[in-house]
Length: 228
Image (cartoon, rainbow, N blue to C red):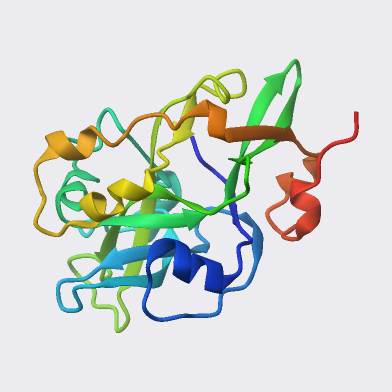
């Protein structure tokens, strides 16, 4: 799964990396947790170009009566994302890029869990394959401000991360961003072909301290390597 990640890349570098037109200033984040806001790139039909929006992490389906369901939908599995009722409509019509530069995973070691920080070797930013939805409060309610939420798709782990955890987030190739964001593409086959483990040789996993375990800790100490 993917339960925590970072976005510590300066905003101007994100603008260049992801081909954004407008620049918004984002705080540097070292421990993004579920139900918090994440920086996601979408293309909306009324705009037609990539835009960076802050979405709440934990997808709430439009038909949900209780928004707490989002806390259980921070991830969508590649194997069922196109058929599961909670995700299938978003998979067809509402896909996004969740911007990041690294994520955390925990390895079970006896009675404890060792956190690892997994990133690109050159520390460049990248994008998770994400889906988004708009929730307006359920059938009986009407929210003045709709809640826009998202989820991150996971797949089988690559060789690097498999010893830590059997799942990993889908990291999209930059050449595939346009395909993933294409509003006209709603067939599952070409989309499913993108949901594969990323190349191990370009990534590194670093053991870090349990300081990251507390979501309230959100500073550079989270990614500091654990001393041997």
